[in-house]
Length: 229
Figure 1 (cartoon, rainbow, N blue to C red):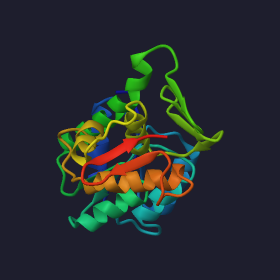
Figure 2 (figure 1 turned 45 degrees about the horizontal axis):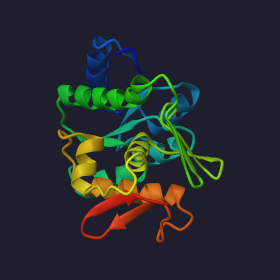
Figure 3 (figure 1 turned 90 degrees about the vertical axis):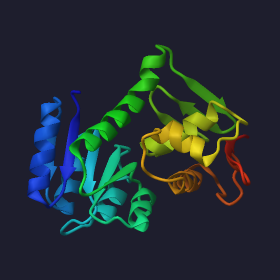
């Protein structure tokens, strides 16, 4: 796959197993064993995605995720030994794109990674021409995966961009939470529709002047979400 990944976990046996398996797929793998080291490496190198454990020494995974989001849109998959839904939702609130609960099957990890990489590569493969759409004060470039509001670039995560792109290029079409979950996360995704709600809320906080009275991403009560200016 030719990708560069950062694995962050204080359980060295887990790191060793993940590293071996991902290197077998042709990936370049860096490893960090605490939150401080992870932040230093994330700032110093450019990664295609990060596998990030929730429970870490020095700086916990949620804080690491939040700080990385201040300077990077790199896809982040949270690894958590806790099965409670709140931990998963918190991970998404802090900017994670996906989560996997321990103990996990390495084949599941590979499948999630490949799905993320496949979605990230699609815009560039679809057309040689930049796929740019300007609506009101919003400008979206699907080739470079960048979004601007009134000329100011908005820092979106990979999943936030995917959700917004789907809605923007299908204006006025209402998508149910289930449809968004299937189209953006994939039919094999084990999460539930609250994942969609979290991402819509976070998206509105970034692109709307007044998230409680949105200009772009609207709610069709009892049905789902749609884009309209």
